[in-house]
Length: 99
Image 1 (cartoon, rainbow, N blue to C red):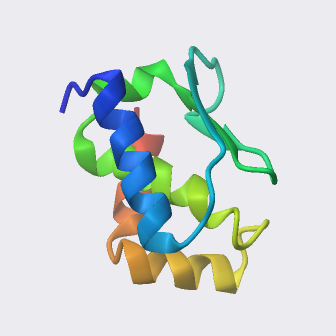
Image 2: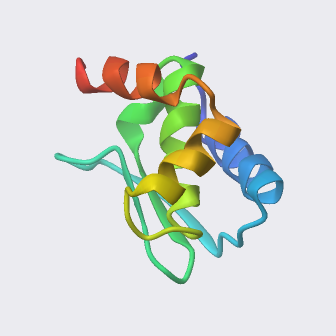
């Protein structure tokens, strides 16, 4: 994809609206061990390395973090939401882990 910052932030706002969650802030910075993180109050931090990934993988990371505003863990409910929004999320997760 080689997105720019505006594309990435735009995707966050679109997905937040679709999922029905409130994102208060979006920050981009280099992160050594994570692709992204989100606080319970809606502060989303995205790794700048996402800018060079294919759109399908950045979309997975965004949706994964936003679903955490609905479900704080990775249990059955979380997986159900992920499957509803991105049916092939497990394949995308596997691809991301190989990077």
